[in-house]
Length: 155
Image 1 (tube, rainbow, N blue to C red):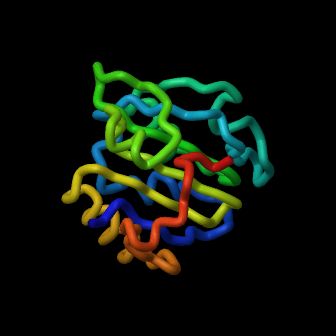
Image 2: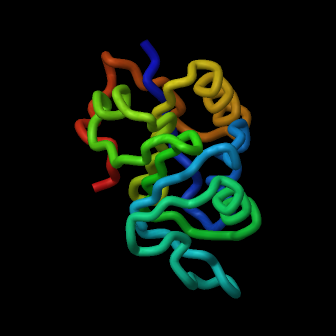
């Protein structure tokens, strides 16, 4: 059974998360962020944090504009998508994910290692196809046989 996908993104400034999430209707979700380390690029230098330093939930339209309309540099990212009106509790394991209202988890570690867990099969296929079209390196499906992650967190 496919749990998600993993791949490597370029280690550079850009709007890469906007590209990664392009197949999704980002605006339809509430997104929970743990305030991990990423920065908006201002005048070709790292500026303000892309996300606040605290755990917060943001409207999908806000996140979509943030990710598509800015240039930024990713170091660590932990985003979780919930349908509007659903419980936005934090999850720590894949089993928590399956038993929660969380629909998608996006993790970026060390600027290049991206992982997406997704409950909806068609969305997962679209995300995989998009990553393939974008030419992201080392793209593969995550299955119960190759999933080495013990926590759905970047820490």
